[in-house]
Amino acid sequence: MPTNGTTKLTGAQLAILNHRIEGINKKMSNTIMRTGRSGVLNRARDFSVCILTRDCQLLSSAEALPIHTLSGPDMMAQAMLRFHPNLKRGDAFIHNSPYHGNSHAADQSILVPVLDDDGRHRFTVVVKAHQADIGNSVPTTLHATARDVYEEGALIFPCARIQENFRDIDDIIRICMMRIRVPDQWYGDLLATIGAARIGERELMSLAREVGWDRIEEFSEAWFDYSEKRMIEAVQALKKGQATTYSTHDSFPGSPEGGIRITATVKVDTAKAMIDVDYRGCPDCLPNGLNLTEATTRTAAMVGVFNSIRPDVPKNAGSFRRISLQLRDNAIVGIPLHPTSCSLATTNIADHASNCVQMAIAEIADGAGMAEVGYTFTPSTGTISGTDPRNGKRYVNMVFFGHTGGAASGRNDRWLTVLHVGNGGLCNIDGAELSELYHPVIIRERALMIDTEGAGRFVGAPSIRVEYGPVGGPMDLMFASDGTDHPPQGVRGGKPGGQAGQQVRRRNGALEELDKVTQIVLQEGETTIGLTCGGGGYGDPKARDPERVRHNVAEGWVSHQRARDVYGVVFAADSTVDEAATHALRGNVA
Image: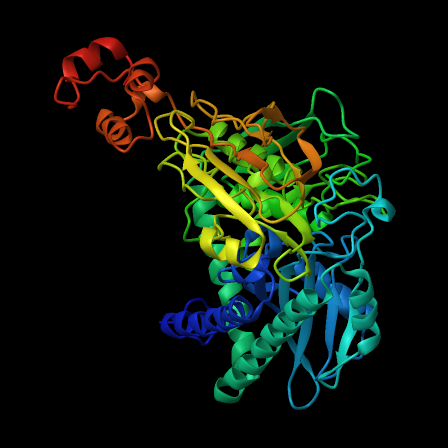
């Protein structure tokens, strides 16, 4: 039967075409995963792909990192149309400008307009890939202390043509090869992203030959309407209300000593089926790299909303119609003005902005929303660089040696390896053996830490501890760690997750604490230790199912002492739950 009164597509046809479009996304993703040259792409999987309509609405972003695609590609596609009104088949554009819709300069994107045989623009494919190096003034793509974009130093392309008639424009490539520390690696990643975009273009054209361009565009409108309908149902299932919440980022150079307090006011209007997020109470932009772009601000709000509702709502321009945002210029969570640095715009402050939204929805209604997701950019997720003594070649790479951070929701325990809230658990953890094969590094330890979970009726993730160091010579390390002073908070009586930490172990075994923002040269025989945040808990820990606590103790996540002191669970001699003693200890808690 028809899905609504305007489309001729049946429900079955709608589902089939959606899966066909998602299949194109997956082919693009597979291309990058198999052909990317840097570990950021081919091991950690820090990239995203998506498809937009000709009027720049997000249609599909299957398997994409939320912080990359929920908002941003639409603004980037608009910039492409504004700067290049006469599109031709064979065009491709490189875009990483944080002032023209991109997330941050490290996320180098390729846009390819898809034209029909008559030269009409039908769709745009976007491939976004985090770079190992982007020409910054220091060997990291996350320059936390950059006072402005000039000190940041990144090569920025506001939607510049990089291919015409399917041929490279070598001028741009030569510029990049001269500025980037690992030019061959960068060029390999560029080929992978362009290749993935061309795969998307080819597959869309193939689908159009099969079903027709008009049918795909008809599907797009019907899919948006269907997605909006699902979103309306999800919002109306929430409780009406309004809440204001706060989340504090640790103090960094260029920020207040007590940290940076991010705030969001969230209003759920079930009658109008709208969720409004107001970030206008956030501080002004700061003279460092923590400021968000407009794209990551908008996306952060959406991440918090979608984390708080039923998971089966499609994430596209249709469901986005039910989210409104209140932003202001020159705010750290808002719309930055050039030359503000936005080097860390996908993480750190963006995570706090998302966490505020999902914590506010949890405050409005028990069972909805989510606790605070942890912060994991300690040395375990730092940038290493140097000269490989095995071959004399320069290397730069962002490593993903270990992360957890997942927060509890109102219905379930955490997802363990989230990394950070905007990532959604989609990045991989680097394999130890491959990391040691590709770089002169040895991983000494990678272990989950007992009693670091955010306790609650539903629990957050525990912290992970990673220790590694160089082999055969010195190694530069840079990181920007949050969550040491302000660990991720629980909601509705839930407890905070474990806090972050960062240390260096000298050759004599002595441990030294490292600053939260550090650039250090590790010598052979030295190691660094990164302790990532856990995730916040949801609800009173003494309301947790005692059998779940028993399982957590048996698995080594929680100690017997913590089970008794925090969860109020007592065990018999055979390690089963002593129900009478537990009931007595818990008192009147349901």
